[in-house]
Length: 300
Image (cartoon, rainbow, N blue to C red):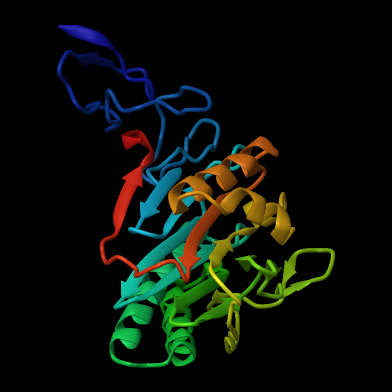
């Protein structure tokens, strides 16, 4: 029994057929979210209008007992090229945010690879007794090598930015390459990083990638006066809300997950022009937990 025509080549197809016998198109596959065409290729791009289809990374939330993060595609981009990770080593919590460079190929792979590699390295070296600055340097080195390894012959190199925080004891250690930022929110709220970018243009002067040259992370160790919050974020947030006091007004006196959600919502309400990633790590407010839970958007 004929059920219709193949949307790609027009050949008549029978009920129950999974593929068109003429062109091999997958029948019953989801159509493009932009134009509706049943022509989405294996690479995720619509063969009719060229739009990259949404993925499971469009909105992700991660949560520890006392730390949490949100990463969202925003309203203007076709995919989320940011990535984040949280991990715990004893009573020390570490977080990483990476922002894929949109002008490079497969930026979402670069950011996810860097974040995952760095988080694993931070946990390993901290558990082995390394001091936070040494662990941070090693995490950046390994993340940079992992991103370099993604480059394919004959193509430009995937690339991303990097920022991490190690919070525990009486100090917070920040490491960064690029323009993803770290803030201290609490008594004397302040920006802890300095953008590796040309002033006024946002043109990066440092990044992770095969064309980045020798990566030299900048590292800062900060001793807070009292309890507060360490905030890591991509430029999807700080382009809208760069001032520490404005971020503190939203992030303090809320659970880490609620704070990350509120800050993400503010960036969306401001236009959502870029991918948005926010990690909220309370400091000086009790022991860190050891369990990480991931909450995809569809489960919220």
